Every structure is written in structure tokens, then in C-alpha cells.
Length: 323
Image 1 (spheres, helix red, strand yellow):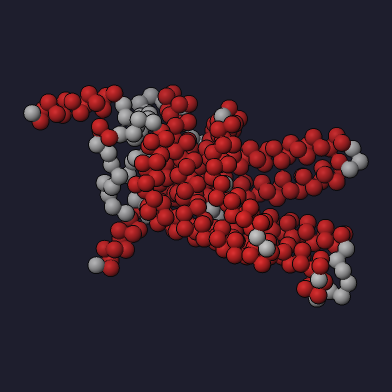
Image 2: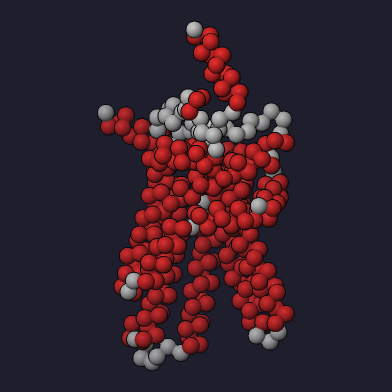
């Protein structure tokens, strides 16, 4: 009994969530809500497995936040850091920049190892978002094996991006004090970092969907990000709504509740945050790929999970044969 329960937990139940033809959603919004309702428990199971790979990243971020909070407290009470004299603005600046630099440096390997697992997550959420079956564990594992090379390359580049942006931003920022000209490359660096992060919505789904070189994946992702910039920004913002709300609450509450809100944020991501974010973006990218990529591929099926007129015709034929 226990063995069957654990197998069901990890592998799910085949055939669950399928529609009769007359019940198929007619819009992508209907498909999203129906699939979210059907797959919610599966997303939790999938997220619990996937979130393990992000534990090193969480530890590094929490330690950095803790150091900065202690620094802020030491500004008022130097004894908190066993210091006899008050912290000067120069000391604060040096400690702040040092903490940020080494945190971003440690994040390179922490984020770098997440790529293959993210590919597995994207494969399963892509299927669920278009009402196709996928096991929460076995298909997740198979997708990791099939796509680990480009996914690992992408995650290590993504891990390097925050540090590169920070170094370039501070470099041009120091020189902007003497010349406003350096504000241009400084702003450009930030913009490129933001665009790269938005490209992640398209990169991993393409890796697990198409037989395409990594260069082609980057090219398509950049074109889709720029060409659909308002939508790209919108869906990135949607995935950050819950973390943003937790952050706002943390700012409104007294300082002693900061660690509590960090625990709430960590619990959200460990329970469902990662999988829910990828499910939302998968629902969006499925439609984008149908519109701009799949229509140009001979034999590629589009609008999976949605009602089509031929479904009604097939249903009528089946009913006639049954009679």
C-alpha cells in the first residue's frame, strides 16, 4: 500500500486531466485555468523535486541578506559587529560592495547547476499546459538526460550575467561622476541584463521542444523577446507578483519580521513557486511558438488542447458510427 502511494506521488496517474472533444477549452485563458486546476497537485509534487537544486542558491542569498541586515544594524550599534567605533560611510560602501560581489560570484556555480533540472521542469509544464500527459518524475528525469548539455551551458551563462552586469554597472557608474557620457553604457548594460533574463522564458521551452542548436535558440529567443516586448515584460511581472507582495510586506513590517518574511518567500518557492512560474510562462510560450514557429514547420500540430472545428466533425462521425 505504501509502495503504491509513493509511486502515485512521484509518477502521477496516467490519463488524468484529459477532455472529451466537446469539453475542450476554446481559448488559451480557459485552457490555462482548467489545466492549472487539474494539475495543481502535480505542480506541487514536481516543484518539491525541482526546488532541491536551488537550495545552494537560497543559502547564498540568505547569507548575503543576513550580512547586509547586520551591517545596517551595526550602523546604529557598532557593538553588533564587535567594533568600538561607528561605521563610516566609506566602510559601509566597501562592505556593501564586497558582499554583493562575492555573493554574485558564488551564485555562478549555484545557478549554473540548475539548467538540466530546469529543462526537465519546462518539459513537464509544457505538456501539462497544453493538456498532454507527462509523468511528474519519469518524464522530468528523461528530459534532463535528453537536454542537459544546452541547458547546462545556458544556466552557467545565466549565472555569470548578474556578476558581469554588476561589474560593468559599477565601472561605468564610477566614471559617470566625471562624465555623463558613461551613463549610456551603464544603462545599456542594465538593459541587456534585463533582456537576457526575459529571454529565459523562451530559451528552455525551445531547448526541450525543437531540435535546434543553442545559437538558433538564442536567436529565436532574442527576436521573440524584442518583438513581443510588452507581453514578455507582462508575463515576467506576473511570475514575480507573489515575491513582490512578500517583499512589500517585509518593508512595511518592523525589522524583526524580516527573517520571517524570508522564510515565507522560501516556503513559497519550495512548495510551488518554481513550477507555477514555469507553468504560467509555458502557457504563454505554447501559443507564441504555435503562432511564429510551428506554423512554419511542416506537419507540426498547433493549438494543442484547444477546441478545433475538426474535433466537432470527428465527434459527429463517431456518434453516427455508434448509432
